[in-house]
Image 1 (tube, one colour):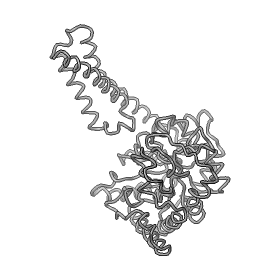
Image 2 (image 1 turned 30 degrees about the vertical axis):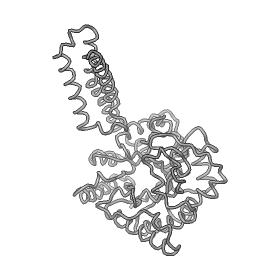
Image 3 (image 1 turned 90 degrees about the vertical axis):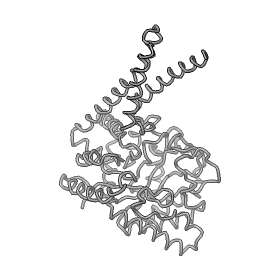
Length: 433
């Protein structure tokens, strides 16, 4: 019995430390579930623990007992500190001088949970676009969202701001983030076995359906299609979230290119832009960039002859934008992910391929970037010629990421020539009405 009591006491100490860590880091993307009601539960649990410990006489059991009680007082204090820090950073961003803020805001597309909050950012010109997903359109809110987006676009025009980019992930198959209310179509991979003319016709029809429904909702940019080649079976055993094996169209570059190009044509015919992804490719990597860094060690000539064929064909034959993933192309730049590598973006995509369209990062709130040095990644991405920085999964991280960009601008660490060229590309892709 004495041993069980000691084990229980150790667990109480350990639980207290866990609560403190969770409270102090409640704004971390991995702890997003703690926000809102989760904060209340955590604070209430820590207060209850203090009351129980005092009632059981731990305050009178010497220094160790008092320290244990104080330990359980810290979660609430840590949570207050984390919340104050977040609110201070948010207020600082919202009070930034309008002119430089708008210049930097042109490069950010942000996910959100509160439309009123993100619309304030959009009206101030602190962001150029919003990313919507299922929780933004559940139930009757889909119709309301359409009206809100239309009104916000009007206010942007009145403020002489570029049209708002409204982006979504509607690939079909397992990534159908707006279905319902939109139609859930099969994955494009289901067309791979059809005759070439039939699959092209159906792929374009899929694109038209997605395009028409997205446009009716107010979305003007679809983050699709996926051009990564399908990986070998069980190659990536740590792919918990990307699930590229289920999303890839085919392992044949020609088939991927044909289906993707037809799908993009269907989107564009409906007035919705496409974003091909995830260059330089996820099919050969062994880890999931949602959580870990990932290396792509394949020689360039092999990639050019296989994995990159769909990217080059679709980009050359459409107005599609390009999403750069957080994979490190080791033969080109072993020190940083492609999403913020100048050697990859400017050296390969811009100069070698002569692609002058819009380049967007994958979500910066992914472990491969966010859990490392996201501030450095933001600055390097802008200086590499990336046009749009995506902050999708946890839009609240925008304030931290934007602060990084502002600090770099003030300190003269941003390449003015690169930013000017990027602004020109964005104006061309999203012209004023």
